[in-house]
Amino acid sequence: MYTASVRYDIKDKKLAKEGARLIEWAARDMPVLLQIRERFRKEKPLKGLRVGACLHVTVETANLMITLKEGGAEVALCASNPLSSQDEAAAGLVGEHDIPVYAISGEDRDTFFRHITAVVAMKPDITMDDGADLVSTIHKDHPELLPKMLGSTEETTTGVIRLRAMSRDGALKIPVVAVNDAKTKNLFDNRYGTGQSTLEAIIRATDMLVAGRTFVIAGYGWCGKGLAMRARGMGANIIVTEVDAVKALEAAMDGFRVMPMAEAAPLGDLFCTVTGNVNVIRGEHFKKMKDGAFVCNAGHFDVEISIKDLEKLAGKPKRVRDNVDEYMVGKKRIYLLSEGRLVNLAAAEGHPSSVMDMSFATQALAAEWLVKQKKKLAPGVYDVSDEIEETVASLKLASMGIEIDELSAEQKKYLASWQEGT
Image 1 (cartoon, rainbow, N blue to C red):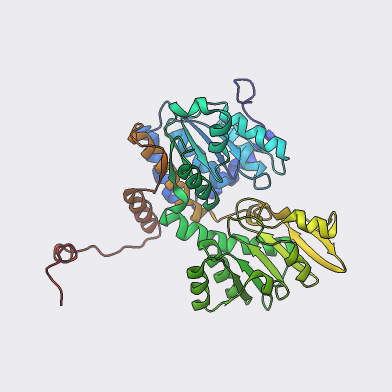
Image 2 (cartoon, rainbow, N blue to C red; image 1 turned 120 degrees about the vertical axis):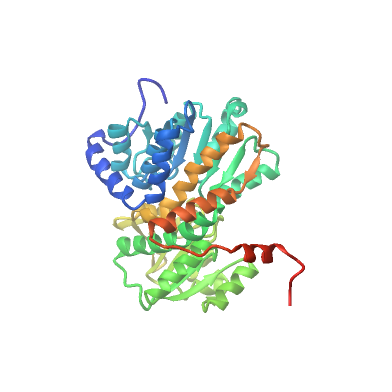
């Protein structure tokens, strides 16, 4: 629990020096967040507030936590996924920055939820989530904390889906900023970050040659688009499965084969789910897969692949390689990566720092925005403001040495007028 005497639960504090080195390395590629950190250091917009975060414990996340602390906040962090934590990053935050962290790579389910409870115990004014586990735990188990909370931010598609459902049901009692839906997050983090890091994780875990493989991607949202783009660039033959007619049409117009999973199952060499939904690959699909098929998930929770169905067909698996389990379905071998969890963080290092720079800059500014609202917001899910979007995009362009045009007075007048036309 979060107490004066027990302020962290990590694998090994002796990893702090190595963690600090890696955190500093990541910071070199996070210029937008560093500029915000410098302003936060001077202005202290979060002074006197407690920020509890349930995020992937990586070196990039560590830089966000340091930024929040520089802004005057008391910060505590736990993992949003049992397999995604970088033990060095956790130790670096604890040992070098005196930030409480509750995260151990590979922690079991009970430890995972105990760590969430530890962050809840700090009685946060603002929460930050990647999957809505922290905010939903507070709603279910500690509703007495809700009246004093300023709000929350949500980093991932899965979490936004959960929170919008809570809002529709009248169950959401605080305002939440959908950081995931920000253009500088959704378009870039989800597309370029997930696309690159998922493919990297698959190659790390399997040593697979992607060229010539038939790659089945379930879901053609921004994550699916990014993964399809990168996999095609490496020579894979892409099949997309979808339930949304518009997204399916877009995938077809982008040059990919589109079909139901039942038809794709016997064709695929490699399958990856990126839908945010449950049981996308099920028993009937496993039965149709060819010998040696690889299956993985890049959605937030480990529910997209029905491991229960796979175990009913094959029994317990054999670990054949780090992050690779072999299941025997009859005489066919099916390989599951990273136990069906978020493969890009379980088998690799997640998104590149330069992409997370924009996402975490938006997180920091969204927290500041919640403070400025001073409880004026009704409970609900809010989009990131245009001002924050413009700030993050402009700072990122400047860090890349890119300049853009500005509208002239004449152009502004023309765009604002209905009287001029052909």
